[in-house]
Image (cartoon, rainbow, N blue to C red; front, side, top):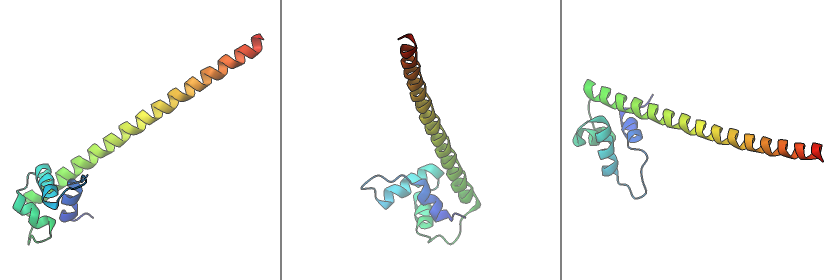
Length: 105
């Protein structure tokens, strides 16, 4: 099970080179709608409690990010599959042409 601090860190990903923790926290804030001070305390596990609306916002943002990632991966896989099918079709067409040349010769 993902803790809330881990969830915020996942929401801040991907982290570009030279990224700072405050910038990552800001990204997590934008994704969840939680104020910076609360996100900071959750990030560093200093929050004594997590309100229900904060937990729901974090979980909803995390679910949305994971669903979007899955959709992107599926799209990438379909694109790769289409490229492979296209390459195989082109190779088969070349082989058929070569076979016809041998038959006609």
